[in-house]
Length: 94
Ligand code: SF4
Ligand code: SF4
Image 1: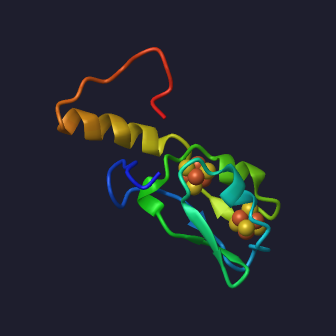
Image 2: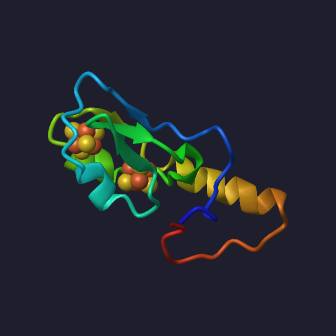
């Protein structure tokens, strides 16, 4: 989902390469294709596509991923506000 973006450079997602065992679970659960595997390690290839849902960190068996859930949603709201777009209510912004 390359067209999906919040504010650039604000995503809190991090991967600890030392802990990563290359199981690919983060690729499987990420809805925005933020990861790839290179040299048997997870690599962030689209950090700005991260909506900080936390699914990757929750499912990583080695706790190699850290992310602050919800910051991306706040960024989306700010982004829409800056662009003058109406913000929907009553549902998940992500
Ligand atoms: S889920 Fe965790 S251990 Fe598995 S590839 Fe992703 S970061 Fe590495
Ligand atoms: S927090 Fe969600 S969107 Fe971000 S990398 Fe993890 S699974 Fe993908």
